[in-house]
Amino acid sequence: MSHHPPVCAVHVKGQNYRIKTSYASTTSLSGTGTMRITSSYKTYFTIGENDVYELTSPVLTLNNLIIGTTYLDICETMTVKSLSRPEQKCEVKFEPRGFWGEICKLTGKTYNGKKETHKIHGNWNAQLSLDKEIVWTRTPYPEKVDWMYGMSKFAIQANYFPKRL
Image 1: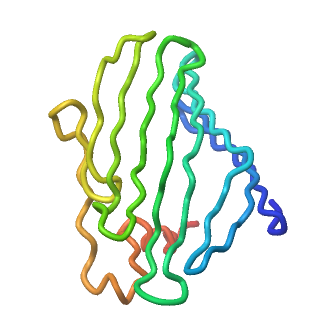
Image 2: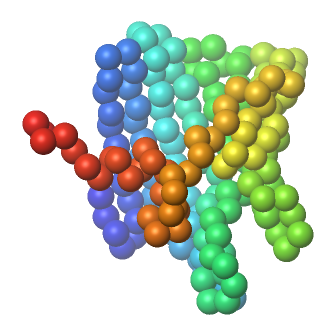
C-alpha cells in the first residue's frame, strides 16, 4: 500500500471464494470537491473452483467540501464480466447526482451474448431491484447515526473485536 500516489492491493480467501483487488488512482480537485480517478482498478471474484468474475470500478467523487453538505457520489459505469463464461456480463450505470438529480440512482442490464437478460434499477444506498423484484434493501441506520460519522451498525461493530481475538 502507498499513500502518494494511492496504490493498494488486497487478497481475501474464504471457504468457497477468493477476492483479489488492486488499484492505483489519482485525485482531481474541482471548485467544491474532489474526484478519485482510477487509473487501473480490477477486482477478481472467484466463487467455487471455476467461476471467475472481473469487476471494473466506476468513478468516485466527494462533493461540497468547502460549502454546503458534503456528499459522496458514484458516477459512470461499472462492468462485471464472467471470465469463465465470456458471453455473460453486467453493466451498471451510476447517475451523477447533480444539482437537482435523484440521489444515488443506478440502472443496469445483464447480458448473455448480445441478448439483454435482466434490468437492474434502484438507489445504491437504499434499495435495488432486478427486473421488478426487490433483491436488496438497506438495513436501517442505528440511532444517533450523525454522532457515528454516518456509519452503519455493521461498520461500527467492525471496530469492536471479540475479547478472544
